[in-house]
Amino acid sequence: MGKFLASSHDTRQVLVGRIVTMDAQGTVYPRGAVCIEADRIAAVVADPAHVPEPFAGMMAIETGGTLYPGLIELHNHLSYNFLPLWTVPRSYTNRNQWREHEPDYPISISLPAKVIGANADIDYPRSIARFVECRSLLGGTTTTQGLSTSSSGGKKWYQGLTRNVEAPNDAAFSAAGTQTLDYTPPEIATKLVPALQKDRPFFYHLSEGTDPDARQRFLDLEYLPNTWAIDTDLIPIHCTALQGGDYQRLKAAAGMVWSPLSNLLLYGQTADVAAAKTAGLLIALGSDWSPSGSKNLLGELKVARIVSEHHGGLFTTQELVRMVTSAPARMLGWHGQVGTVTRGLKADLLILEGSSADPYDQLVNARESDILAVTIDGRPRHGRLGFLDFDAKRQERVVIGGKDFSLDLTESGDDPLAGLSLGTAIAKLTYGLAHLPELAGSAPGAALLAFKAIEREAITIDFELEAKDDFATLQDVLRASASALKPMPMAPITATDDPDFITALKANVNLPDYVKQAL
Image 1: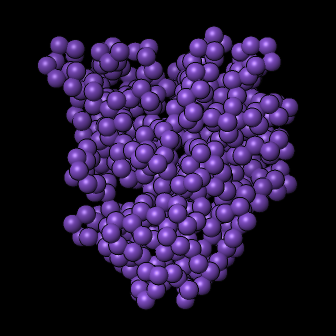
Image 2: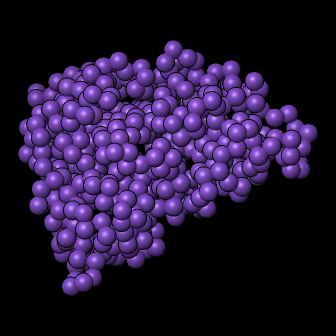
Image 3: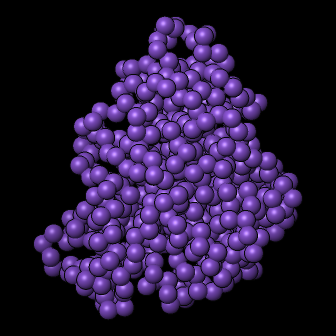
């Protein structure tokens, strides 16, 4: 088996293996070739003997694996994704119940996230960015969502590595807008409608919960009689409270984002995706966040299949794979850039070991340790040690499922995370979570000389800090909370290396028995 060439944008590569294009026809080449030049796919051929010039005569890289488009996640909250899985205390019918009224929520989620994300030691927010992007990458994700648009510090730290839909840092991609909290009825007209007029994708967390109040957030979209704030730029997330007929109205949107595990852990049920499918909506998957979600899209695919099978095989495995490849790309309007293995698109690829199983079953069944390589812009960012030919100066070795992998985390130019390895980030966050009371007690006061600089570097925690709290008030809150906080564990970054993860899921009070039995 050959190795990847050293990464640079002036090299050409030919990758040979089974190719799952995810194009509209569902084309799969049992043994084809993907030709990469710079950051794009120059050709995709069914027979490696027929690659075009100037690739003819090059030494091809025999992957021995199956090539897919890089996975695209359309629902996440990056700033929380270093926290452990939450022991959900009870069942909820509306997200505002746990976010505003659950006593354990600030102790287990919001305050720890703030203590680390807004810490005076900027290596804490830097470590969050490093860890959560690697968490996605190690699960095959090349594009993710979930950067609060109100976060100046977040935009600084989340540059490079995986694509982020709110800050793609590439003129070829339209940047998305995002709203996490509910708009009030008047704000639908004054904020949501103008956001939808900007000709860019806009994510809106819609009707999360199961009660009439949650559904009312959908009905609020009718901001004038027979006039709805729904168009092809709207990408609603959750939609758990919608009723069957509501999806016929929602089909005017770009699609919807489904997060089954988080919904089930918090509410005991998830969106009516059968009605969504009947209405013809595109559906994408999102793992939500670490307190109540999968580690990455590989985990979310498995939960989606469990729900599908519970409903009589609602989705084929090919349809499930589309939810993390071609469907989210089309919903974003990025389908001319990513989402399929097609000539002219960006060379964002996921390569899995082996090619004997059904290609769609293979991806849904895959664990992080089954990955051979992940490329973004044609550049190998993560993969099996010995398969990838990385420059040793920027190679970091990690062990996943007992197998050696390497990470390429370097960026050109002024990289805000320069010199920060994943191992160092994990050590920093592990220490921080173990010393939460001390860190909270040492939060700086507004009189500190460097206070404004700290504010600029902080990562905004998007559920809590959206224009209602200023940074000085936040630091006061953290100091006051020090005595209530307790040390927390740092969970492993992958599911395959977290032996307690499935056990913790099965202990959840809301997860349906059919899911527990299938995990």
